[in-house]
Image (cartoon, rainbow, N blue to C red; front, side):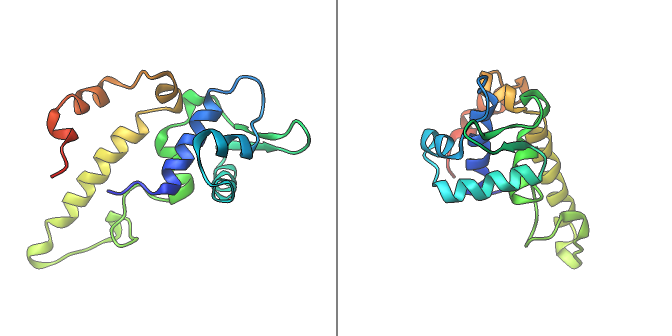
Amino acid sequence: MRISARADYAVRAALLLAGERGGPLKAEAIAEAQEIPHKFLESILNDMRRGGLVISQRGANGGYRLARPAGEISVADVVRAVDGPLVSVRGVRPPELSYNGPAESLLPLWIALRANVRRILEGVSLADVASGHLPEGVHSLVEDPAAWANP
């Protein structure tokens, strides 16, 4: 699985918004704070707005804020808003695939991969990440030294 720059930037921007208590943040401030190209961020924020994750406000005191509390928005919600399905194969969702012959067993493998990605990303909210208190399941995965190795 590959996390795109778009998804990484979107989650980072959402985390900055999750920690904001004073009001909307301007895209320029988010871009500068997270070192994200401003034009790219504007496009990402528009996708997040269309996905119902952020609200934009115009004017001198305008900017962006989360549409719901950070505890109600999962990392999966953000990734889906900007990149679409969490797991696809050649741009197709696994249940829409079919294989034959020796490749038949690939479909359950892709489904299992999708289920595990969902379990992790849907189980972690922006509030979890922003607070630094990740779920125990995430901690147990990263405690395995093999998780940090690049085979």
